Image 1: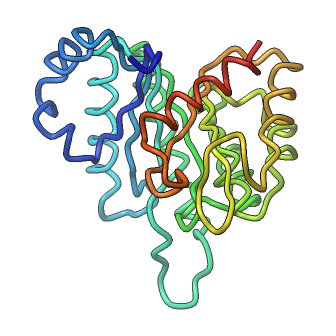
Image 2: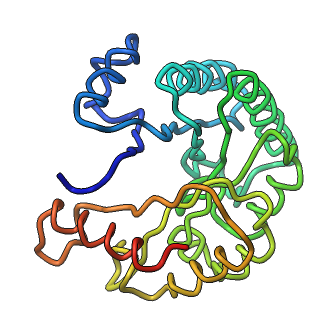
Amino acid sequence: MLGYERIEILEKRSYYDPYRDHPDALEVELRKAGMTMVAMVVAADLYQNATVEEEIDHCLKTAASVATMDGECLLIVPGKRDFEGNQLGLTDDEYARLAEGLNHIGGECKAMGVTCCYTSHVRQVIERRHEINRVLAMTDSALVRLCYDPSHIYLGGWDPIACLEQHRDRIAYVHLRNFKNGAYSNPEAGEIDTQAILKNLEHHGYSGWILPCMPAYAHDGKSEADVARENLAFLQTRLW
């Protein structure tokens, strides 16, 4: 065993396909392995008028699966940066549509006992400082929380510590990974001072989940199992 007791599931991955209509069956399989689910990740283009209702429905179906499996969080990743012509970012109408969709999903999640978290993501529609700030300003802090991922914030051009200082009250979930040599890397080594991030979270009393992300393409030749053990050991020696 690797020592983990909780797992995050990426809804779009094929391994979830057999359980899409039967999340209770996945819960049974996880419990057989001594695991339970803490969160599920879903990607959604909530700013696009033509598909927003479909995307909201998909998010809510995923949230219902989280609730069925006694999970805690729905993590929403923004859609791709697919703008018209020379458009560099969302229009005012698109921001309003995105915020309205997030607030609606957040309210429905709250009724299910699930926490709705939005996360910025490099090369997607919300990746830069002004974009993150605008979405958080336009959404209800009681309904839409922040999934804090320092690697994507860093790649979006913002100091992860500065983001943490500004939005710590919205953070309900942390993806912890680093970046080095042009690729994502494990938390302990890279261009981001993850130890300073953990100390900051501890100082301000953060008590939510911290997930060590393990991208398969940045393990320096190690097996994923070995990296998983190392990441858990890294957190166990630094968490409060």
